[in-house]
Structure formats: structure tokens, C-alpha cells
Image 1 (cartoon, rainbow, N blue to C red):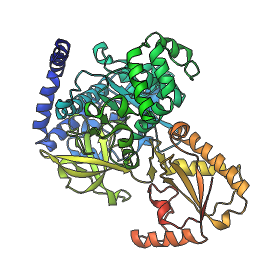
Image 2 (tube, rainbow, N blue to C red):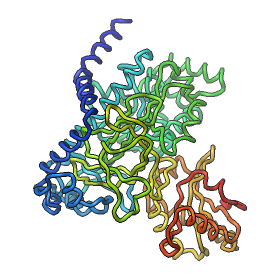
Image 3 (cartoon, one colour):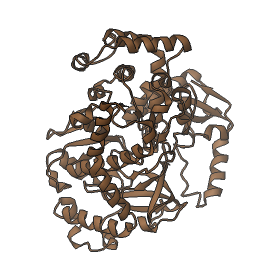
Image 4 (spheres, rainbow, N blue to C red):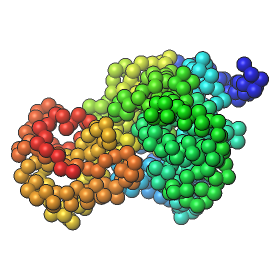
Length: 563
């Protein structure tokens, strides 16, 4: 081991000492989830009792979990949105005991408006703690790969898309945390955080690769594996430009990069003629340039989601990356980190019982007027549940619509894996499309385009070249193909209006929506069979306008498609 390497490893051990202590205490507390969780809930309610939300829900009178459930309903974002709007306008105490809001993390919601999640010091401390414990376990699992203190590739978003009336920035949380990293940690991130300001998808991927291919990368990190696939495809498609820029110390001039971002990047771009020559020889020999050709598999790790609907993308990774270990990032969102995977090769993670109080509703009872509600200590292995976090930053019994399955226990604390966005969601590449988005778009478009739509559903369709959504219509409604194509174009555009994440993914990952034509009477038969399976009365039955099943197209008799 070289002296430089020895010193870096020693520095890494020094920096991780507090995390190692935390992890030992966390492991011990996982033997007592009920005690830890109920103590945490009491602390949250005490701290937040004098907020307007706390007064409205009589936090000061709550002494038991039963009291909490009586005073606070299970509810989606819309329930807390009026309080968050007051925080946006500077009235922090409407929802938060913490007087400082660092930013609002933006996400797409179940309504047309975006969700704004307040990020406070308490939020950031819990978020970092979870990441640190996840990272320590990941490094321990891969000691032999010598990844410590080597750079990683991570594409962050824009930390400030806009500001609230009171001046609080609103944007991407990963971009914010990258921006405020300590200098010694920031050095490990190959991709400059300002890349999040680049809106053009091709330019963002290109810049990420330009700053990474000359470095000894140990990890590639992306929440959605579709990002890793697109990164690999961009590397091969743009290899000549990338290698020329690496050789000359330049940054391609014809990319859609804002001037101020380009100025920042240009001052930091480096020349590496030797590395450029090495990679050019590889590309010429193989006729391609994939990540596995740039960063050898035996020295790299992929960190990404592996649960839910990620399977189609995960199956593509070996073609581009070889067979490096893959570590799941855990169940995390703009609303916070909920699980911490403690080993590789699994989508399961232990509940972060230190950061949030968790409740669960069994999958089959989510639409019940009085569903069973369970604590973390009451779950059973193999059960599927909707998760309801209560946080220290204003989310209470929050119905995020995430469906999870219990796969085992760490001590006595459940290990859970993410199954998907339940309750009529679809999520191919991170767009998180909801039935609400679909029905709102349909309502708007049928007013502008006289396309007959007697019955329909929208469903995701996997395609190796580019996945897409299809709207399933019956033949009697499709008599004018020109009109149908006009309708499809308007519907596709309107989905992007209703859901900004859909619009963003359409620019880089999703194909345009198509029409899948079914024989007459298909929907009546399908609804009848579904009602027979699920039970209930015909009067209460609601035909789903969004079906999240990737295999739905294969299960019905599609006559033809219209693009």
C-alpha cells in the first residue's frame, strides 16, 4: 500500500469513528423497537405542541399512542398542505417548532400541484445519519474492493428551482446536500453539484461523464437504475466527443449549458492526454465504450433502487457495467429516509426507528373506513403494508402511498422492502404517475379534442428501446385515426402539465404515449371479472383509470397500436 493510500485509509477511519459508534447503538436499539418508537413519538409531540398544527390537534393532551391516533387522522399531503403554505409565507410556527427552514424539497404529488417538504436542521441531521450508517455498512461489505476514499459518480438535481414568497429556496434535496458538503467530502463527488442547474438531459449526462471518465471512480449512484442505463448509453454514443474533450481539456461548446454554469465548469475541467489515449485504444478495439470498459467491474459498486418496478432496468445493467455488487439505497424520498439496507444484494432495509415514528395499515384494509393500524413491533414477516411515517418536520401519520413487504427482522425491528406506489400509481422511471394525474389530463383534453372515450385505462408498457405508457381504448371509439393521433399528442402533453416529473422523464427516458386498441366489450368483461375477484357491490365499483402492472398489455387482447 502506498503512503498516500495508507494516509487516506487512516483518514477515512478517523472520519467514520462517530458513525461506527452510532451503528453499534442503533443495532442495540433494534432489539427494542416499541420502546424506541414510542419514546420518539412522545418527543416529537412535545417539541411540536406549540405549533398551530400541534394546538389544532391537541398535542399537549396526548399521552398514549391511542390518544395520538384519536387526535390525528391518517392523511395524504393535502391535509398538511395549508400549514405548509403558511410556512412558505414565513409563518414557520404554523407547522414547525424549528424556526429555520433550510429549503423545501420538491416532489410530485398525488395532485396537480407539487409537494413541498420542509427541510429543517432536524430533517438534515436524520437524513445524514441514515446515509452515514448505510454508507458504513456498504463500505464494510466491500473492503476487498478498495473503494474507500475514491470518487463516486452521482447526478444531483437543482437545489433552487424557485423561492417561496418569504425567500426560502425550493428544489432538489440531493442537489442541496451536495452543495453544502464539507470540502473534503465534496472532493469525492466526481460530478460538480452545479450540474443540477442544467435542464437539457443530454447535456447533464454528458457533463457528468466528462468530469468522471478521467477519475478512478469506485461507485456510481442513482436512485433509479434507468439513470445508470442512460448514462451508459450516453457514454457510448458520445465517446468521440468525450475523449476529445478529455484529451484537450475542453468542454463541448454545443451543449445546452447555462452560461454561468459553463463558466464554473470550464474553470475546473482538466486535461488528461494519457487517460484519453488509453480509453481511445479500448474504444477502437471493442467498437464501443461502456462503463465497464472505463471503470473495471472488480473495483466498482452500483448503488441504486432494486425493488418495486426496477427489474427491467436492472436486467440491462450487466451489459453496460459487468457484474459489480449492487447495493439498494433503501426506502427514501423527498419526505425522508425510512429504511437503511444493512447488506448488499437485497432491496430490504431495517426501519430507521431513530428518525421517524412508523405505523402500518395492512394492504387489504387501505380503503376501509376503520383499518387496522399497527406499530413496527406488531408486523409479521411476509405481510404487505402501507407505511405511515410521522416525522419531526411536520408530517403526521402521512399516507405516502408506499406499499412495503416485511422480509425479516434485524433484532426485533422489521426489515422491509419497497413493493411500489400502491393505490393506483405507476412509476417506470421516476415519474410517479397517479390516477389523479391521468383523470385530470383526460378531463382537460376531451374538452379540446372530440375523441370518443367510452372506457379507458392507462398502463405502463416495457420496451427495451424506450418504455412508454399506453391508453387502452376499444375499437368502436377508434374510427378516425388522425383524430386519435391528435388526441394522443394532447394527452401526452397534458400529462406533463399535471405531473412535472412525467414531463421531465419524457425528455430523456419515456416514449410518447400510444393507443392500444382492444376488441369491443373488453372493458365490460374485464370489470366484471375484477369485481368477482375483489368482491363488493357493482354500485361501489370504480373502473381504474391507471393500472400500474407492467404486464397488463400482455394480459389483454390488443388488436393493434397507434403511435
